[in-house]
Image (cartoon, rainbow, N blue to C red; front, side):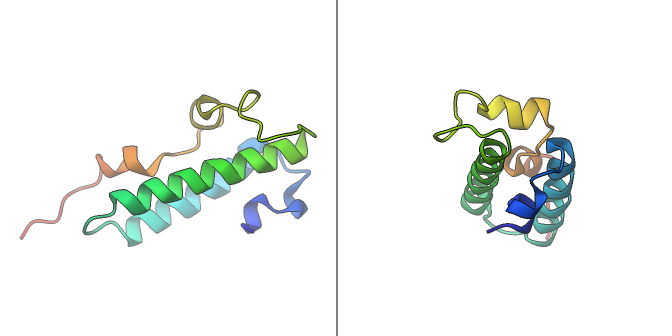
Length: 96
């Protein structure tokens, strides 16, 4: 379980959670930015948005997966969650 989406963060605001997640994602992406990372970034993006959605469902006592109440756009556009696949296009390429 991710520490930023565990039960102890239940009283935190979603923007605060996303800020912490973004910091971790940027650090991870910078560290693992070389080579073929598209599949890894896709997996991390999926896991991050699903964990955030689970946390939001618990916080707001929503039954089910919460896809109707918290669609993808809610996390990315309204809360500002970064998407690693989109960030990959902005990273500088290593030159040999």
